[in-house]
Every structure is written in structure tokens, then in C-alpha cells.
Amino acid sequence: MSSTVAQTPQTPPAAAVTPCVKLCVVDGASGLCLGCFRTLSEIGGWSGLTPDQRAAIMAELPGRRGRVDPALLGPA
Image (cartoon, rainbow, N blue to C red):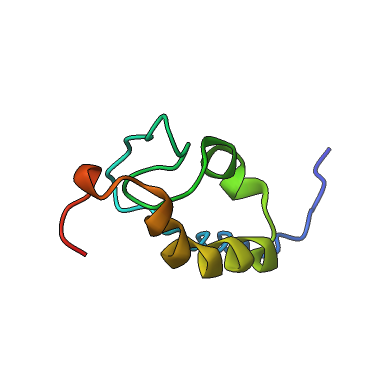
């Protein structure tokens, strides 16, 4: 007995845009990653966010740098 199932070509899902720079150190005082300025919650849930949610967080990231002690960061 043979059944024929039409195969639909599958395209891989698009990679999620991420601000990760592979410098994963979280500052205890601010709760922000010193590499990308996201919180642990944002980092952990990143792949489950919608593109709009990720874009909203990414828009906030440059302003978060000021919440981190400059002594912990390299030059701007």
C-alpha cells in the first residue's frame, strides 16, 4: 500500500534580529547586559518576541547605556 503526500518546499524561518555582541556579562546594579544592554528577561525571551516587540526594545537600547556605571564599559 503506497500513499502519496505532496511535499511542500519548506523555507527555514528567518533569523531573529538581535543586538547581541557576544559579550554576555550582566551588571548587577543595573540588571543590564554590558554588551547589548538588554535585561536577562529580554535575553531569555528574545526568540519568543514578535519582530515589533524586538524592534521596540532595540530602539530603547542606546539610551540604556547611561544606566550602567561608565567604569564597567569601554569607550563609547
